[in-house]
Amino acid sequence: MAVERTLSIIKPDAVGKNAIGGIYSRFESVGLRIVAARMKHLTQKEAEGFYAVHSERPFFKDLVSFMISGPVMVSVLEGENAVAVHRDIMGATNPKQAAPGTIRADFAESIDENAVHGSDSLENAKNEISYFFRVTELCPRTR
Ligand code: DGI
Image (cartoon, protein in one colour):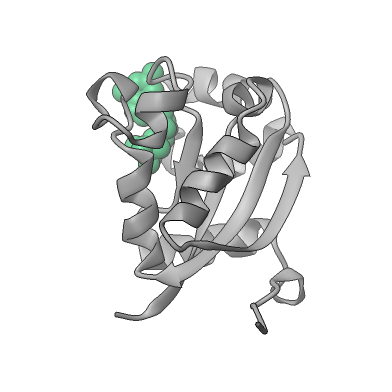
């Protein structure tokens, strides 16, 4: 299996619940390494740009308002099969359908405020990482 990188966002609801450490523990417990991280309060333009693929969806406006309602923690996670491993531990988009023990089952209340984002393909991961980080800001582990 290849070593991959994926983009994680801990969304404003989870940051507001003081759950950054709890969610980072979930990443580390499955072997995902945090190789870049930044806390950020997204601007409306940044949130709209990040979710541009959903711009025609009925929930787009609410999604953008939610994403700018408080700071987020944006991170790059690295590990074997990182994109799929991260998606698995996040759980389903709707927390009510998320498997027990997943991040969304344990930290999220609703589909509108679902605690975390994770890239859904390697190609999207590359684009999403470069949306937030320069190559020189990534810190591969040396030990
Ligand atoms: O990759 P995901 O975050 O699991 O899901 P996605 O890329 O399909 O959608 C991005 C976000 O948009 C998702 O985390 C929550 C919101 N969303 C997606 N589908 C719906 C939705 N929000 C509402 N209210 N209703 C939806 O059907």
